[in-house]
Picture 1 (cartoon, helix red, strand yellow):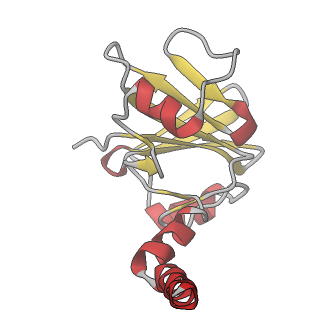
Picture 2 (cartoon, rainbow, N blue to C red):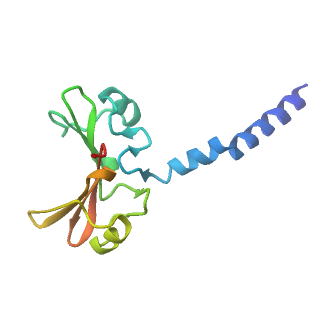
Picture 3 (cartoon, helix red, strand yellow):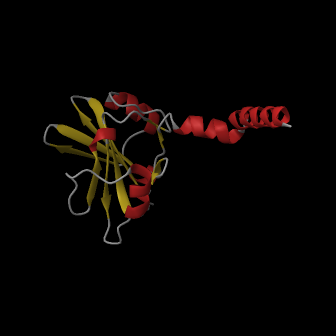
Length: 155
């Protein structure tokens, strides 16, 4: 009986690892940032409590409506209902957008992926390109991607 249970348990573990659920969890570890949505449970519209459940308590450097998790390269801006309205992925976040934009890419390579930006703004040595309909804003510094910001797509 014990031998049967061990064989059954091993079989179930192998099946679990080969199911679509197992593959989906492996994909999540690749940290794909979905435009207009976010990453894993760090998503636009998430409540402050669900963000804390997903990422732990924010850093002490957080203030007001800005929650920060600097160790993993994440921060977000909350609205007055404590819902995430802007997700910020910093340069040391180990991720890539769903369309293939990586930290360190040049603006020309990013424009080849997303096309011309709806808006471009220069600020203090950096430039940000915004694609409102896709829900993504990308900051460039020294001519490379250093921050990706996700928000609800605008029509």
